[in-house]
Amino acid sequence: MIDITQIPQQVVTVIVGCVITAVFSMVVAFFNNIRKCNNINRKRLWRIEKTLAIMAKIIDTQTDKVHPELSSQLNDFVQEMLGDEVRS
Image (cartoon, rainbow, N blue to C red; front, top):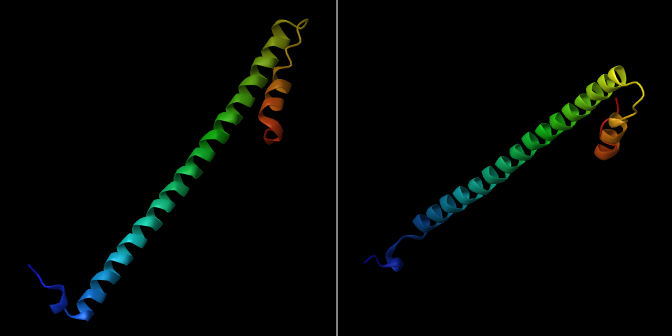
């Protein structure tokens, strides 16, 4: 067995410093990864919302052309459901 009392203090200090640096680096990398995932999800959600609004407009336009007597107001419904984010 290694007797801890015989290890020089400088060696212990260097080892502890390396361990602390490695742990801190892993924590920073973890939070950067979470941030990147949140940005990707935010962009994906924006694209889905925009696609939904465009599809609602297309369906609403087609319904007005084919059945002018019907009033679907689908575009208004989508804008209401998505909130103030979609203004087109």
